[in-house]
Image (cartoon, rainbow, N blue to C red; front, side, top):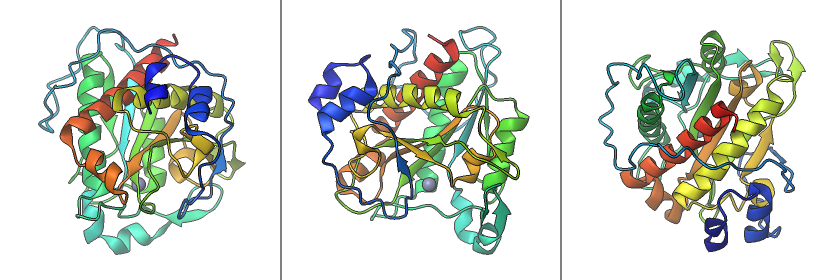
Length: 295
Ligand SMILES: [Zn+2]
């Protein structure tokens, strides 16, 4: 992705479209996404200059508190680590259906893993910890929807959305990695589509969530060198979905990011690298900071 790497700050949609071309196959295993427009018009802004060192260690422990100052002082960010390492031991609980407004869906799933057994749940928790550290350094108040063994499984997808709503989050991000076929690689950011059914009403968050997601995608692309998905989103790195409870039930700006495909060997080599996960957290953080700055 040398071309994309040369043009940070350009129009993400255009850059990615030009770099990848429209010929990418669509082999998404279990995805029913409507492709996002390749002619995105949102500029990807420059990241803040005072971001934390990419070598910042992550020991998984929560700092003693967010800094009292910093550009994100007063801002609330909810980080939702996809799945839960404990879900594997609680399949009956996570299989029960919950109301996501448009329909009923499983409370949660176990998530995927690399062929060598590194689980998506471990990956998402690690990136979430790194992201929390970066955002707290900027002064943000950060809340996780779960933290490994607390609770022991889940929470359910409806509850994951409600945690962001109850926190009055200024931005919410759900972190995932995909489980598609070998050869399918790259990241994509999932934006909420417009739904208005039952408890689901995304009409007021579709616009700001697209802004948030576009900024995250642009910064993630630049910081990680991970290409946009070659199997979803027509090369834009953006996909819109209306079947995810975590988005349908959100009343605050929220997106998902699928950081890569755990079942692809090239992507797996990145996803299992702590240094790369730090870059991933950095890209997501810069996207969120940019969105909250509104610049
Ligand atoms: Zn997932």
